[in-house]
Length: 108
Image 1 (cartoon, rainbow, N blue to C red):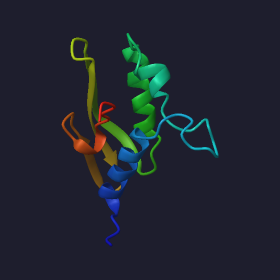
Image 2: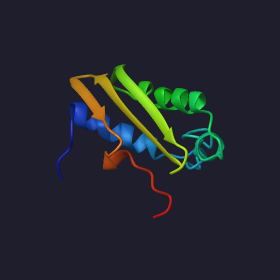
Image 3: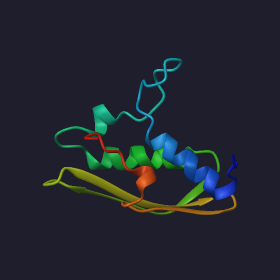
């Protein structure tokens, strides 16, 4: 077993936070992302989603700032994609739409 450190560890924490649904943890139902309320809706408010995701990124221990961030929604495919580059302790974490660690596929 190998423990990760630095930017790789922060990237792993970010990935876990994006896969953590609101009320998923029985000890604190207030923790997690409100996907069903704010994201998985017929017409999601992109400003709310954008703000929510930024809060998740900036609230992660080790993240110092966001160097870049973009979010887009393809209405016909009903697919939300985002990319960001975060300045973190010890380096940079970059995430692109094709990044498998950050893809939520509810059809699977």
